[in-house]
Image (cartoon, rainbow over all chains, first blue to last red; front, side):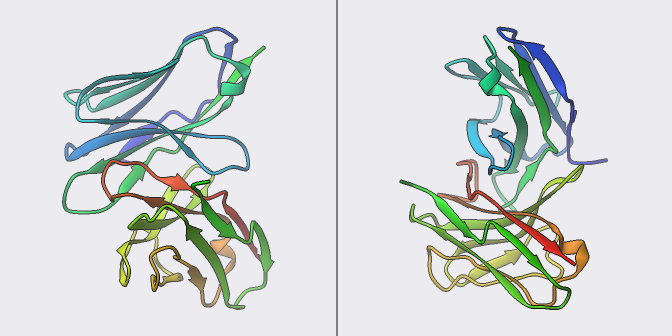
Length: 112
Length: 113
C-alpha cells in the first residue's frame, strides 16, 4: 500500500462547478499537508498548506484535513478553464525525517 | 524574482556519459531537494540537503550524486546514466524541511539513449 493515494483522474467538470480533489494516507505521523498545482511542462507550485487538522481558505480554494480519517481534500469553487492542471497532494511529518511524500496527482479539466 | 533555476531544460545523452544538472535558488533557503517525476509514480525524492555540506538520500538515490558546497546551489550528478534514468527532474527549495512547502524549478527533461 502506498503511503499516499490519489485518484489520477482525469476529472472533467463544466466551468463554474465546485471541484473536490482528495487524498488518503496511511502514516499517522504526517502533520503538514500541502496542495500543489502543476501545469503541463511546468514545475509544481504551492497552492495551500495546513498544519494538523482543520480547514483553510484562500480565495476560491479551501483545504480540509481530517486526521481521524487520514483524508485530505481541496475544494475549488467557481472553477475556471485556467484551473485545468494536475493537482498534487503532499505531506510531511514534523520529526524523524525531512521528507515530503507526494500523491501521484489528479488531472483536472474545466470545460468552458 | 524569487525562483529556482534549473539547467538545462532538455537533455538527450547516451548511456554512460557523465552529466550534471545545475540548480540554483535566490531565496536563501536552507533546504533543497531533487525529485524525479514519472507517469503513474508521481514525484519521488532522490536526494535532499538540509544545509551546506549536509545531504542525505531520498527514496531513489541509486545512480545519482549531489553536493552542496554553497547554500544557493545543489547540482545533481549522473556519473554513468542509464536508460532507466530517463525522466523529468525537478529541483526544489524550502525555508525548512517541514511544512513550509517547496518552490520548484521548471524541470529538466532527460532522455538517456
